[in-house]
Picture 1: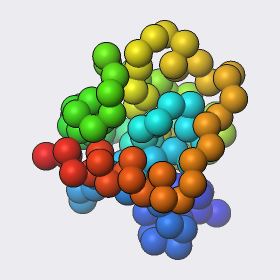
Picture 2 (picture 1 turned 135 degrees about the vertical axis):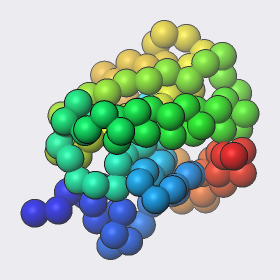
Picture 3 (picture 1 turned 45 degrees about the horizontal axis):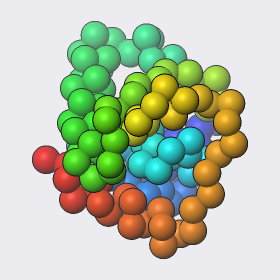
Picture 4 (picture 1 turned 90 degrees about the vertical axis):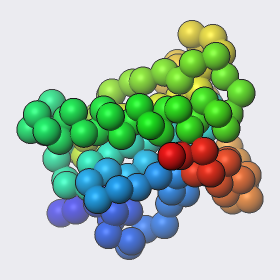
Length: 131
């Protein structure tokens, strides 16, 4: 059965896309811990990030680097943090989170809530900065 992320890749479920190429997709997390919290996924369905072959793994890291640069330009932050958890969705993914303090990457804190317009605005600001 396809994961929710595969359904997003296939256009069956909408997302707030910020960047895409032939192999990877970056979109806003709809349960963010910070404004500008982005998920980066391979388009190929693979459960565990480190099960990607070397080319796919290096590719997703380099793509994430470009997305992180766009986040940093669009969202006021000191750095963009990286987390790989992968326990909730069985599809490899990388969390990119704008950071101003170490607490900004605490996944146990309550998730933020944004309206559709707020998500669209955040996503558009990041997408505009993606090179």
